[in-house]
Image (cartoon, rainbow, N blue to C red; front, side, top):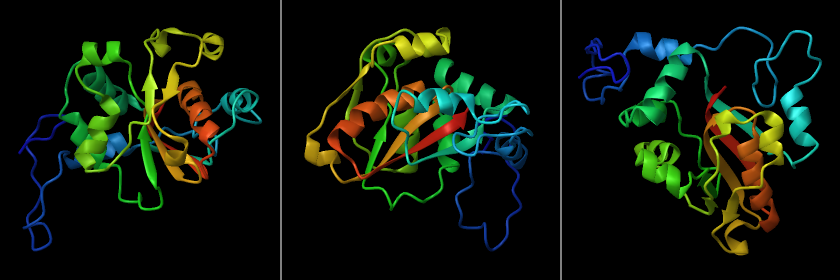
Length: 222
């Protein structure tokens, strides 16, 4: 078996503990590179890498004046050089096998959530890419989720400034009943958390049905 990331042969030493264990999709070197977090001051809430002179996270301050925040934000990976290459290959080069790589970082702490909702992609983006990069990772992990959000076509967020994203119309709408969300503990899942605008626009819709809590899980924090 080869490493899904560097394509080198996996050479894990076999012992009684690993003999009947399925080998992971990453070699030790790539697992270490992807797990590495860049040094520096970080926001304790969104995990953004901040400037030393910042007294508080400017992104969180910007969003808190416009949206109700989530209860928490968890990030699997930092957006270091290795992670950046992984997401480029996974999202834009069609390397779907990398969903298995991201799934291995997910862990198993999902029982506390009653509903898992992925951030959706638009029909145009689905047609262009051929797969949903977020749900494919959840499928690889074997997690059940609900497609209670739908997204309209919009300009790529990476081409817009923070203010342009803030001024843009909310592209999400709900595809569920109030009782599907009311009083529920929700986990909202996204692939990359950049400014946080996408996640907060999605939550703006979810909060209209009065969930108990909304926690955010993102595969990486840019």
